Length: 242
Image 1 (cartoon, helix red, strand yellow):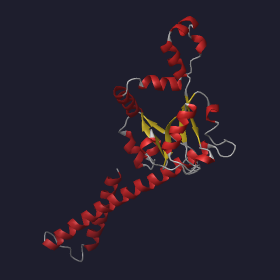
Image 2 (tube, one colour; image 1 turned 90 degrees about the vertical axis):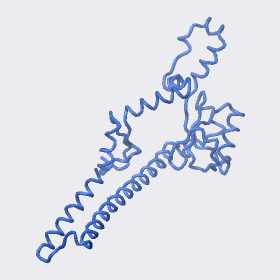
Image 3 (cartoon, helix red, strand yellow; image 1 turned 90 degrees about the horizontal axis):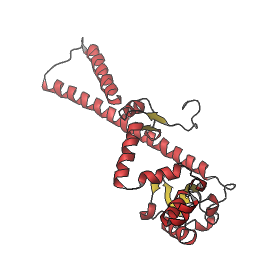
Image 4 (cartoon, one colour; image 1 turned 180 degrees about the vertical axis):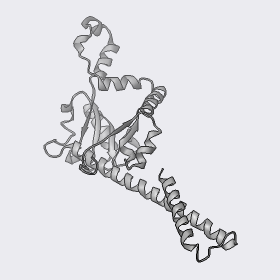
């Protein structure tokens, strides 16, 4: 699929984390490969670090109608009203309007919350999604993808570029694809460098043995010795790839 239809978005889900090494060895980029056990462990650990994390995730993924809540109980419980208000929030992606181009992330995050109650909680920076990017002095451009938490997509009317002009999903996919291609190229470059390093070490060891007189190569066995060296070099390369 990746050769015939390279633009097809793919995700490889594995059961065990150890299986990722096998996926990498056949050319599957690390960015599109994940393991279920790793995800479960990460969610469990994050829930231990931050109380209410599971509740937040559930509220973002599950829609609950207010008709399911008893009206009398709802009016008598201020905490329930606040909780239901929080349940109504959803995550929306968007591209900032032209007037915010050249501004910093901190500026638009602060202004969006003060003026509209919109919480910009993440941004795509260099292809990666950065959560809570308050420490980033990143300048906003036309293709900067932001993610916000608000009640409805219409709340972003004063901040988001109209989808008819430029769809944020296409920009997001473009950045993600470029990052994956660069990461894959870097992965194989390092793998190739490590393989060449192993082969160089092998040849250096053979040369040291030859110079020390531990063995000698005569003219009759020179070809056989070269074949043996090539075979061992290929074995070292295969070991590095594995």
